[in-house]
Length: 347
Length: 283
Ligand SMILES: Cc1cc2nc3c(=O)[nH]c(=O)nc-3n(C[C@H](O)[C@H](O)[C@H](O)COP(=O)(O)OP(=O)(O)OC[C@H]3O[C@@H](n4cnc5c(N)ncnc54)[C@H](O)[C@@H]3O)c2cc1C
Ligand code: SF4
Ligand code: SF4
Ligand code: FES
Image (tube, rainbow over the protein chains, first blue to last red):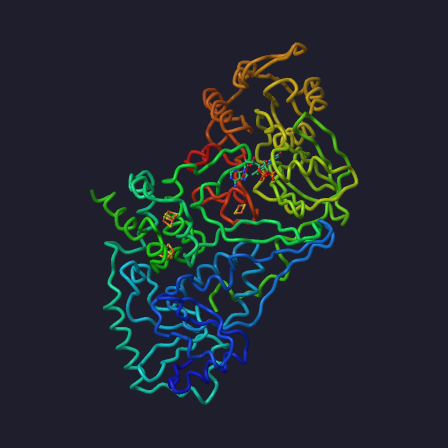
């Protein structure tokens, strides 16, 4: 499908069009930072910050909420147990390329084996409107190294690039095509294509590479660094707080817990975010803890990000968004770790 | 759409359990109770030795529990449960006629056909006898398909010994060697005393290349028993064990059971010792 152009004069109309199809989430200011929040109606369009640098939490929370109901039960079950697979049409506006890559990773992870009905139902009802970003939000980002500064093929419905007074609109799906089938969109001309090229050239210049090697070697470099002392060194500062996994767009470990209602007979079985960094994550009955030491937990996270998820899904387990570094009170850096492992072999 | 999304979302939740009815319940020790379940939906169940079920008591939670009955396509299954926490204690309080929820079977299990013709050495420690019993019952049911069958079992005290009816039957069988030991005897105990590795002395020499060992028990017992098996010349790929991990889904999703890049709930819990070494974080 050929790219189109959306004049910024018509941006509010575009959002109204999205609102006609269901809920709309977009980046808005949250203190000095940004968050994906629901845009309740056309009068809230002015809240949308298409100039946001990065959101605190990734859009993952819309497909895999921090807490969601898997089942409801009556009379303590097992009769009368019902699955609560729910979704509602939702558009997410303004998703940066690295977060689109992360969503593609989650799509692959939740499509494996038993295929997760809860995630896939929400994801299937979602329209993704990506947004190009010209420069890294901060020094912690290394999305270029993770090949995540351009959107993944097929990983969005529409993808917008800000060309000043207008958006250059790339279309990747039938849903995107239907959305762009309106007179607010005009065919992109030579000047628009040139503008997009210039944007991407500037982007490539701003997103410098920070790893000394091509990430295709990352899984193997991690493999030979399994016994390295760098995990020990970094983990010395770690509080095992789990913030890094909570803000990560590709972390999806969870716990399953029952919640009883006031009547003490009915209730819900819920899935909540969990973290491999928490001390009790791998404890079994009897108290044995299979990742008791902090370095082993830190290493596990970094191996999941740089190796395991990729090996399982064929998609990157880390998109280089830098959130885990930015929000870590101990300033533990996965980027630094990925840099240091190169020395393990060369030294 | 990304490739992964091209299929339609599944309509049913993988978290929906089946109702199972307790048709028999027997206290085996102070802490362990044996249950036999059938399925009111009359669909039966098919499983391999070494597989497990996720037991749910709604309002309390879930727990992975090994199937301890002989494998195959059946109408019922059995479990032996040690009361250690919320779910397992609540299970002990259930009675015959009560229903609870099961998901599964989960895990790779072990196809005993792959060791047909071999000598079999079973080494079970403590509660490890529960999963191990599924292997043993299978071997004894189709006894002719295997070489020599040897069963070693160790418990802490005589009171802790599980499945005493089975133990008596195994001790009587002429076509199987059975040895049991306890760490700490009581006044009435007339059998062997000592840790399970001492039983290896009783095991007749066999061709290590034609022997398969199944060592199932607590990690500490596995570590020592595996040395004995290796000492007898058994290959690392011919020694099998069952690994325990925290499990919340059984579906390869929640991450709790992960050892490096292996999900124990799916690719395990039965691993060869060669795999355990490769995993490094295994035992
Ligand atoms: C594959 C497999 C097969 C198994 N087969 C059997 C079997 O055949 N029979 C059997 O009896 N058991 C079996 N188990 C063990 C069984 O799953 C556990 O005993 C059970 O999950 C305990 O659940 P619970 O709700 O009763 O205990 P919980 O209430 O969950 O807690 C039990 C104990 O676990 C520890 N614990 C739990 N949560 C935490 C935490 N967050 N932090 C620190 N410690 C914690 C504590 O020591 C606590 O006392 C098996 C386990 C696996 C993985
Ligand atoms: S690495 Fe940082 S954010 Fe993650 S658990 Fe440790 S201290 Fe918390
Ligand atoms: S590991 Fe850190 S940098 Fe990588 S995707 Fe997760 S939050 Fe972003
Ligand atoms: S139990 Fe959840 S991944 Fe294995």
